[in-house]
Amino acid sequence: MNLIVENLANVNLGKDLPLLARYGRVAIVGNRGTVEINPRDLMTREAEVFGVFLGFASERESQLAADAVDKGIEDGSIKPAIDRVYPLDQAPQAHDCKP
View 1 (tube, helix red, strand yellow):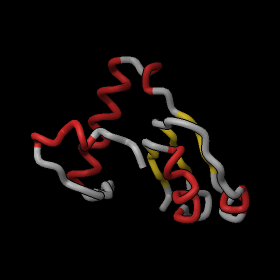
View 2: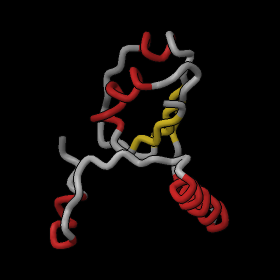
View 3: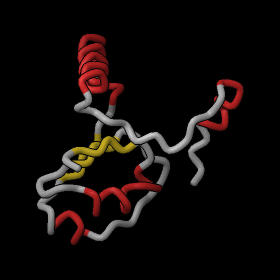
View 4: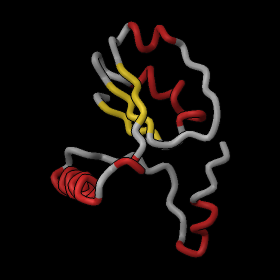
């Protein structure tokens, strides 16, 4: 993978790194604690991990990002990995990020 947008780095980052392609990147947008990784997973891929705080984005930047994601999903260049599907009445459980 060239890019992983990570929403729960404390659970997933160690699993993400071996999936990266050479020069791949992980953008961390969510985290709920500390994480332990093997730096060799970054070194052998010459990969990057960086943090993104969406609270700094302007309204225009947020809209541009949303439009880009929508376009990528429509044209197939973005393929979200869907782990589970919940019925609407279980929305609270869908947002429970406990491993």
